[in-house]
Image (cartoon, rainbow, N blue to C red):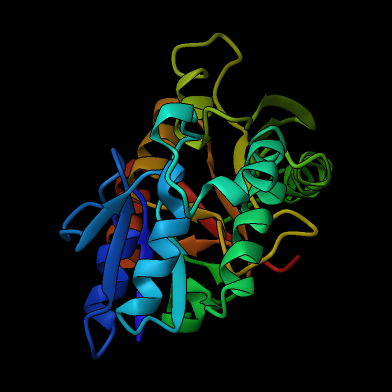
Length: 262
């Protein structure tokens, strides 16, 4: 039996739509997914009980999907099943996202639960290498994309973020903990002038079973508001939610969408 450990956004509902059998859905308290109701909610302070409850219900595999923020630990809310995990959870919360999520994956795996990735369940969320827009890329976009890929790799190696904005070879914005939408919003109304591109890729050492990068219509809107020429995503490393809606929004805004071979 499959369970989704679901966070916010459309991705959990998209997976539910594409699966033949509805999975069990568990969401972190305060981070319910869009468009699908969770079967249970949990807190990080009750992670041990969650794992025990899932196994008791017959869950043998889980898929982590959706966005969450790092919750604060309330020591008074810890239950007996989670207390032994605390020496692993607390240091993990001080690490970058990838390292923290790896620690959580290890806890589930040690409990005998297999980890599935979102792309295992819906591989067509990864679009093929191509320009998926009416607008085509130009030579200066290729140069900026090469520079952006270098910057994103450096960010990823530091376990900081997965995207950046580059214009004329210069980094205008780098993604950190607040996320992609926040980064793009910081550029809206700036005086850098039009042009440049948004670039997103998975981290070089990222475990693709969890936290694979995602773009959607909101990303397109943010790039348009920032005055960019287009979006570049790493082929095989970034999922696109609602691809038809995304490409329609891209063309309406006059941007390009390039799925670039890494």
